[in-house]
Length: 179
Image 1 (cartoon, rainbow, N blue to C red):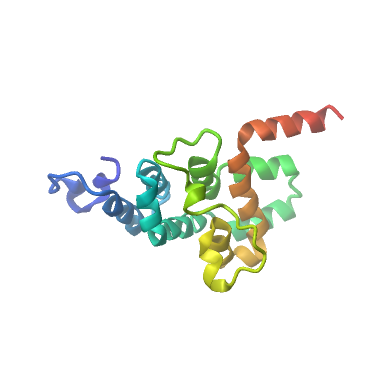
Image 2 (cartoon, rainbow, N blue to C red):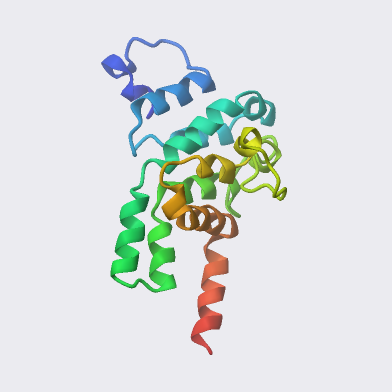
């Protein structure tokens, strides 16, 4: 219902449930920050075979998520203001990439029918991936983003931070604070 409201005429003309692919496409067409996380929710509640057969759509969702935050501004402000690691991590938790990664790969994620790692891992271990193969992982998709050369470290930190979750961060800060 949240997604359908964004259709022309508030979706009142639709008298049937939309298939997952159509719901995701509506979100991508809108390209709004409000809807950019909804496709990940839809993917999470579909089967692993749906995710596998709609990899290109999943790639578009990651590209859209990466474009929602101003990564260049983040890197410039963090450098200019000399943010501590703690502040950087707090800011990254508010990014769409962090939230999407948390939804799909985080310790609290609720995925139906197999995890996202089966279809699109966050990172690939193989250092010798060709350009063609880069889209096989979220990292590969991010490497294609226009801001990656300058802000790639922040982008990758956001997705990996979400995978380990906030508990790991709390433990790390407690260990750092007790030194």
